[in-house]
Length: 613
Image 1 (cartoon, rainbow, N blue to C red):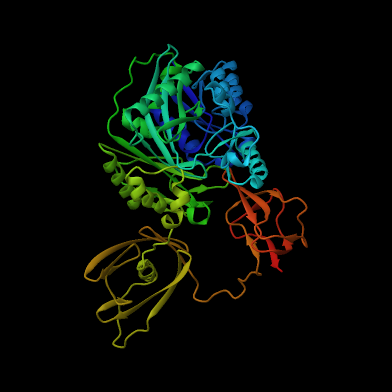
Image 2: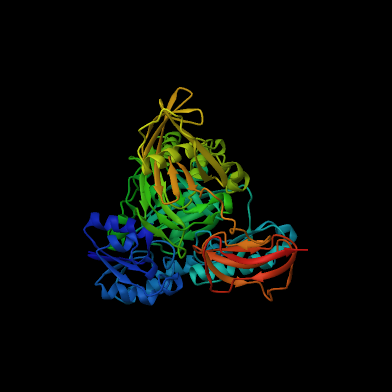
């Protein structure tokens, strides 16, 4: 029996595994980088071991340090979570060689399926060789790892070389393996997968299907179980293929077999030899704790011959610290408050007051709703996210709510191109026009009490705010009858709650301030000074960092005075395990280059200046 378990991971998945361990009576050990010293997963574990450094390459990807941590902390088992070393056969062997229990499949099974190219060969599928015009569009894909890293869609042969180079660099950074391959890209396919669970006694459970078609940058955003609208015959085929893949490598433990479904046919993509981010929807539908099942299987316990029956429908949405309207730019800063209404499962690696840094994935949490029908689960999750309190950096919360209510999704007609088609409408600003007024009234009450009205009418008060990228003014006045504001009657105002009578309807506005950043219900504002700073001006053509990150590459030969073409890549930033190109806005001359490889930059930092010709 396992008594002490180390999780070779961080954040949400580490916290989620620790929760199950606590229920099973298993002591827990966390590992953490220097950047994660005060992270939630390091705080909630019974024991935490430092991995010196901050980057994944120096910490969570160091198999030798993780195994040493497990031994020194007295652990007798290791769970890899997902990402990092979770699909690394050498790490699994090192854990076993140290005399520890490995909560995962045999190293040989990982090795056979870890490379997507080898996995396809096992399933009788050959990747593309030399790409021709007739093969387009194609997908450049990392052979190792997952999570959308090291993936590029190529629609022109002229873009293939750059896509291969970029995918290799991103894959090497995320997984320590820069191997990539090319496969056909199906434009309107659905991403469907099958969760499997296998024991060491020959039993393999296919645990239904999941649809994960809503993706950004080939990384999943919304997932659900079961995959809606699939014919019974296709579901049986998917289950059979998944079981075949598991049996072909003598699989043991939890894993996922992924497919692209198009024109009623299933196209095998890969097998992930680990737990998936979206496993909670399967847990909800089948009434299982997959982590508990993983542990029991690792302890040698057999599964029953038949899996449990599925019940109802579950949907999961990933809450990211990112700005979908700005090319999904990751965001950093303090997460002041995160809470969702009761009745919805929230898996997170953060708690109020935690800092969101640049080194790791931008996912803050996963919200999961389960209900008897898909329509009920959709309504429940959309409402919960809409009512959730998310105070801190910009997130994709509004995008999630709109996606869950989009007709194409509610009628189950979505595919992997959903955001390519609908991102503009889903990210169109829709701030509450009364939010600035509520913020101004709450601020005024917080600084001084209203009262002692004079017979003479007071001068109108004005406050300026930045909301959805635009400046807004709020005006209010003290009168004998109380406060009046922009033609709206003020029913109540204090530092935290403002009630306005708008066309006879009382609307409540909850106001929370963190310095100049104010949250009014679900609308974020920034308080502006009374007078603009005349010095805050930049030269035309200035390129500013759109996100916090590290400069990982500068175009070959690029230096001040060099001619550049509009759209030409100038430098690359890496933030939260993704690489982002900074391109020339116009054709002209690079008059300044302020960036250097390895430099850490903050949002708004001046990187370069291009003078138009």
